[in-house]
Image (tube, rainbow, N blue to C red; front, side):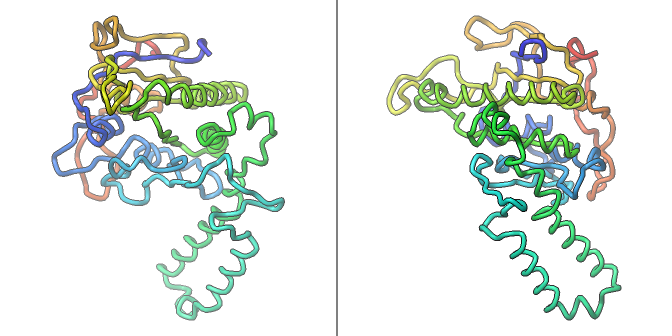
Length: 342
């Protein structure tokens, strides 16, 4: 896959804790100040959400939200990521459609919905009221997501078995396949939160199991997007909120673990305008510190925003608190990764 990926190996920031580091990597801002800014996914959902098909949410998390902070920030619940839950490798489907969580069939859900409407005498009496009409529209959209065209997007049984096997029949592998289907449906931002990488204990034993799963799935996703002529318009960003210590802790209770490390770590980006086969930055021999070309989280996010057609120096679009602030506080074009996309 060397012809379609770019690796930045000198990302750096000062936060060793999950919450602070996740917030910085997702917003480009240091925590504090009394305001929770939205993650990049929420902002792109707001700006780019007009092309989503079938009433799908504009920001989808496979399969859980990260949970380190409120990703929607001050934009509110409308742009909160929709977490699918479950394990895509084991999602169960029927011949005539998707079986939602809890095992209820589409027919049973329709019967329940019909009963609810029969009992809703208040809604019938005031059907012309604007708020009631809005509630009815919301119900219709919810039904579409539960067992309409939106649900079909998540129906991985529609994919040939050889495609599913190529991604790997794992939670992460099938999440990558679901992400490709969501891209095809016009969802502007999809995040896959992979677990198991906080390897304080038995680092190498853990990675021997989960690293091949991730490598297989990411390679299949990139190949699939490229084959479907979607990679040029889809940006894939693959990283954590920090890296792991260069030094392995062999003492009990860690037994060969590696701890949080933020002074120097890597991220991979593919597609979306980034040039392939590039490596940015130089670290020392043990990847302990940046030797040249430090890249901050704001530099990385600023590059992604720019490739999405958004000026990271512009003021936040209309927001519920009337905030007058740029999307990124340090939107310096000179520090963005333009050498690999401009």
